[in-house]
Length: 229
Image 1 (cartoon, rainbow, N blue to C red):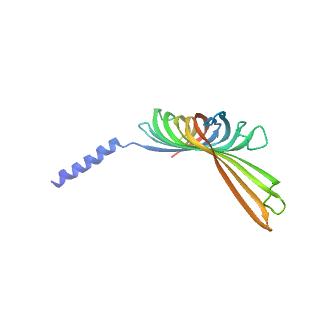
Image 2 (image 1 turned 30 degrees about the vertical axis):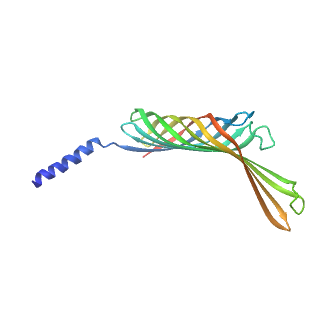
Image 3 (image 1 turned 120 degrees about the vertical axis):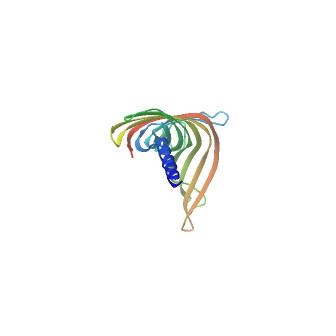
């Protein structure tokens, strides 16, 4: 009886091992150039076009049957001539976006991987501006410094086409094309006044919610180096 039980247990382990899938972790960093078109839910308002230049961090977990999980985090310089916070035609800010998802690598060899993943996440852009010694009635000298920032935040959903090629056992190159629908979001304008009142340093912050942001798209290619372990 004990021998039969032992053979049964060994058989279960052998069977489970035959179905086991190898998991590979891949971490990469690269250069990215996102383009986005943001819709503004306000009568007579134009869409906001943004170009960005930054870095893209990527994680891909992959099983040898092709199943993939994926995460991306990007940050960098945002530019737009449809934003008017700064006193220049082309306003400069920062962008960041983060996405997670899963999918399938329909080509997965020892050297090359090509897959498609569905992704969800969020997008944030901020355009700051500082003015010094503006007229301000509540201060000792009638002046204040003003820090202004326009922030736009949106939820996103879409898909990524991902490819990687191994140059060495644990090192290679990757390319990724992200396409996102910017589903919904909002904008906010923040103003912070810094001034002297009775000789003391004072700060007054004001913020007001801007327009709702709807629809439109972000297209973001990136490429770089990747390590697997």
